[in-house]
Amino acid sequence: MRFGIWEILVIVVIIVLLFNGKRLARLGQAFRRSKTEYKEGLEEPVDVEFRNLSKDEEKAKQR
Image 1 (spheres, rainbow, N blue to C red):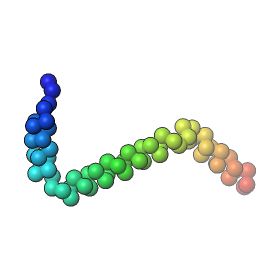
Image 2: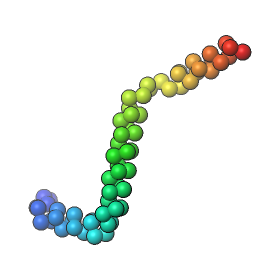
Image 3: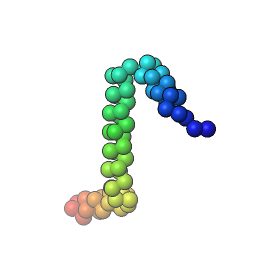
Image 4: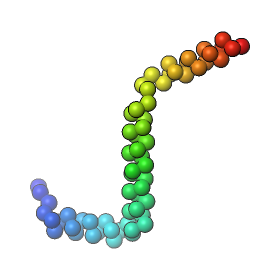
């Protein structure tokens, strides 16, 4: 099933009518923010527990 330009246009108009412009802008902002946070999370080291253990070991040595 393929959507033509008119079907897509009708769906977009219905969405704009249901959710006013401010809501759509906030939704887009939230989506961009979550996408950015997700990408930043992927760049963090995988072995977070190891890093925390190292900090705990350093604290134990200082005592």
